[in-house]
Image 1 (cartoon, helix red, strand yellow):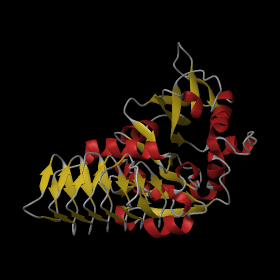
Image 2 (cartoon, one colour):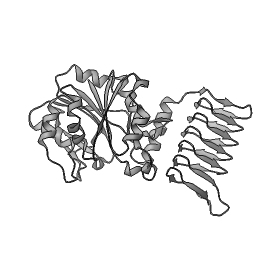
Image 3 (cartoon, helix red, strand yellow):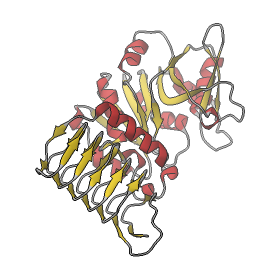
Image 4 (tube, rainbow, N blue to C red):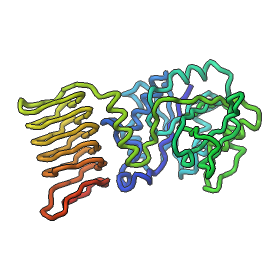
Length: 356
């Protein structure tokens, strides 16, 4: 099987952070989400991966390269505009050929991987397998209605006002070659996009076997700042180890599951896990609380940070308390002498802020 990762979106829900950065490259627990998707496919035995790219193509291509670090072959497929998931399949026809493939949204994080699903689909005669999961607000997603007796998919609806169920499509799909006939047969939706839900519905209505798989673990679409923080929490809970590769001086305290990556320095500071401190980052006279990811080449001095993500090249000084925040690259965040005091923010790259 081949893999197809969709990374052509503009990430408008993460503005201003994604004005200058591909949303798929924002790190969760100090690893870009797109890298996690690639690793999920690799763990499932897939070695031939196509990535659909758009306006942020150059940044994604520079970060991912040809795939050598994962032992895979990467092919880039350019999409002129975000015209829908089915459109991404349509323009990938030459790359995919008639092989079975798995399509994975490049900004999703899922618990447990997909290796069992890949094996199940490869050994089946199904034409499509769709991953679903129960959600609390299904009106924001593509939703599946199942037959109560056979548990087969009856219909799919994209962002319905009155959802027929709470089972949302999580952005992981497996197809055989019949999907190409489907995407050629459908018309753009009211949004002007070729919807993958319409293509799968076409398969259902034309007698093809569409198999639902209900995922019971956690799944997060990292499209909004609050979702990015939630994904960071979950991944830190599962992946964070007590691994000290950098320098921790004798006056510092490391509590719980904390990773200090190579080249990092912890000076007279307390780090409480789960947390991760990136390469060549310097933490001085500071407190880093649980569920915090500090990326590479960051400086934190005389500050307290908890439940936050801080991206590379940022400097934070003399900030008494920073929580629930997503801070971009090369930000300078320092104390201002004015009052009152309150900190909760999402900052774009290269910002300079004097905190009140």
